[in-house]
Image 1 (spheres, rainbow, N blue to C red):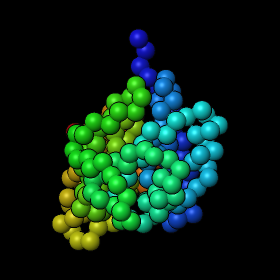
Image 2 (cartoon, rainbow, N blue to C red):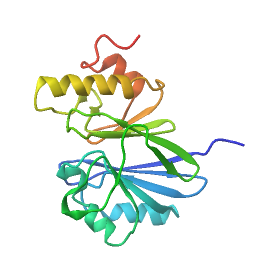
Image 3 (cartoon, rainbow, N blue to C red):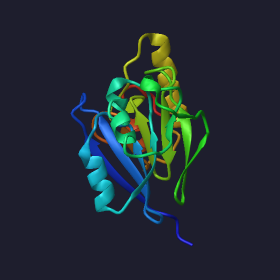
Image 4 (cartoon, helix red, strand yellow):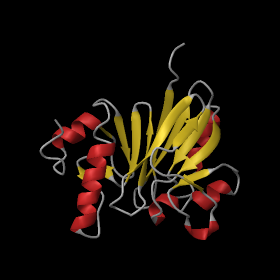
Length: 195
């Protein structure tokens, strides 16, 4: 039996140029939206065009430019919202922590904790890809309030994300995607690189 394939889509939104991602299982057509920066018709247009069924939403952290479109999305879709903590506006969430399993059709993923940018920042690991929110960008890391949080973030990213296979895709909350290998070799915040 062959491994299930991942469908991946990406939209840059008008809210602080934050990224919205769609991940879906090609075998079952079950889809998950990762971060919802603004109400964006492209989400449903993409789902409809590819015959995908929205099965859930994953929130990497609760900053406005990652959740401002969530209430609008949920007004027409009754799906679970996975987050590390409760969200503003009374949005009901499924609280997830480290190693919580995320099932997306035939795909199995897991949550990793990547605190620093916010105390409850989390990332979603699916086969071949990791959605990092603002913990890790191409060539940089998310801003932190102090040096202690910065070191906490660097340590979490190094241990939880840069330990993944080199060819795995990194899908951040802002900016372009990258790969694990590129980041541990060239990201200036991870020098020296892992051994």
